[in-house]
Length: 133
Image (tube, rainbow, N blue to C red; front, side):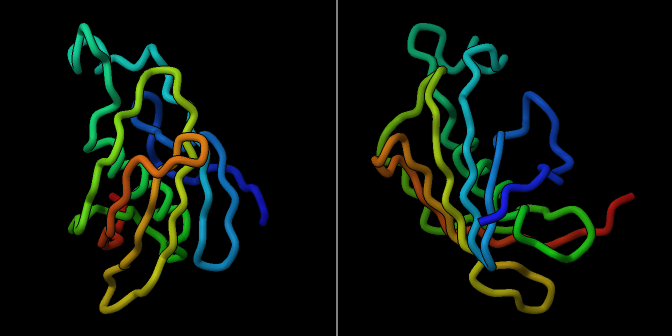
């Protein structure tokens, strides 16, 4: 697999890929959950956890790295999302994503997040590429 520069438009604190490798329609990304992320102050102050919606965003960003169409990949639908274990500040995660199909400008994929070798969440995601302004 070939490691590349991250071409996503996202920036800290909303970039959830530190490094990645791709092969064909598969991408494996790494991410360190920075304890300094601002949302940890309120989610939850006495028990900070990485929000489930950001699990989805991390998978979507990883899938977005596989899209060859120019533009901005925008989330269109989330299916079969499952959150099996929480993630915490300081965790290192691996995101494994596969782009399965493209039809009429919509991209269909699935992704899983692992902490060490344990599956913590997974989802099917559909997105469409919009033209950038």
